[in-house]
Image (cartoon, rainbow, N blue to C red; front, side, top):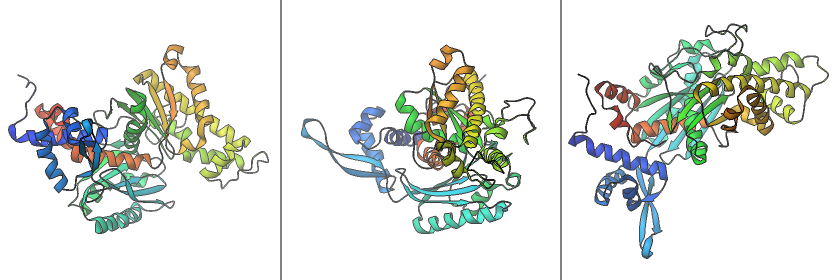
Length: 419
């Protein structure tokens, strides 16, 4: 006989209510104990009893008096601005980033550095840990480390199974190595596009009333994530969202993943620069050269350079084909394009929209909004922060969810989560 819905034991109720209260603070921002009581359905005495230890533990701050009804004043609460911190790491094919956040989500320190061509992962790891070591020494109370990596990333096993152009990372277990070095700190991992999608959902999509958002990460690689009512869809292995390894040309070149004509082969920043440099060499019709960098291509595109415009339009057409395939399959109401290609601006988005419109039935196209990400800063680092905050304070960690799912209680562990 299959087990039915499981209840909560008496001992589990305080922890559950604690997560519900913290989820309300995360969802609504600074608010009073009374407002939390109204939002959660918990009586004020319960809220006050749970909030006290959260303040003592520097998870929550009292942030000043606000005027309420009948001239009464109450004290607002928010996630703490000091006392506890989260470190986030982002690995890209050509760059690394490390950021430090307080629980309120403010960036306190951030570093970005290049990975030299043919640089061994061990050297990159030393670069990363040099900054993490300094943060740990300086701030001490680190509640979690979040690691965001490109895909395909087998989230269930926390393992990169392919990183186009940089195969050396497939043999270096970054997440496990970080976990071993910082054994006293909880370490979490997430695919970079899923991390960015959390940021975009929270800061852009939710306000517009979107229910199903498709996020496209377009830069050094091409990734995607589907967010439905605040939840990132992960798939059975945590591998969902590998748009870059879907084919747009079955007769195209063979990809390292085994497929032919993968979108990423045509549209990544690496592919763009390769094409630009090849056609720029000896080409009198362009100001670009065979040593052009991405910033040079962006500037040339905005200046109307013939080669830059043609190559970026080619990227737009290929991306539109991949996006069209996703739209027909998952039926989002919002598509957001983020990462480095946002630098090409509204004209780039218009080109993508033109090609998408030509490939969809009118009724489908009219029900979809296409936007560029409007959020400043590193979306992936911010999303890694949101992921760590969620698993630490708002919901059960994903490894615990798997265990609870096997016993039939996962839905209760996950209730109250709001990204």
